[in-house]
Length: 241
Image (cartoon, rainbow, N blue to C red):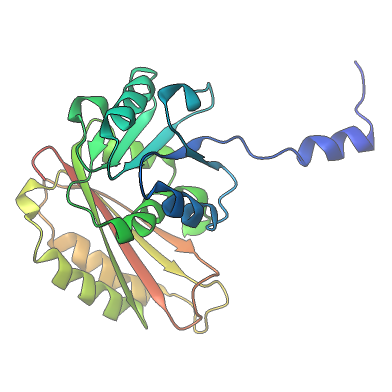
């Protein structure tokens, strides 16, 4: 059996990560969203501006695609159809989606909010943490789920972030939530660091939700956050949400 040389081994490990997730924008206003998503620096996320479905055909490595369009919905839905039929988790941030072409759809999102919504979906999967959340977990939340929405709260500590999120959830019809994932983020240089005492606030919030909701949670690092800030995000889905 041939032995790899040092240079061959180095070259192997310098290969880019597989692009398992794609964000595809089409129509007016997609360029700034795609550029913002690129600035997140996620190695396994490919960002594409497409004019026709032939600009972005599904690949074997594709696991999830997020499609963004404020107009030109016919092209966006045609792209989604090819990915959905290929078994790729297909998410809509399209103004007028053909719901049959997607696993999950967010309705009535504001254009300026789209990059942060995309970040909320991608970040728990592509970043490390104390308690991890992987692509299979995201599939549990979003696969064939009908509709989804996201919420984000930022505060100085876990207790304040959780309390702020509780207030936001008061405006959500929890009886329509079928699955929910909750994600805490903090800078790994934070002092004092997160403790189990902090986590009781998240645990109590989750316990207060209806037992019918499937809940998954994670605790993640985000070194772009200020040391004194906690970000708390939620992804929730349901066929009537």
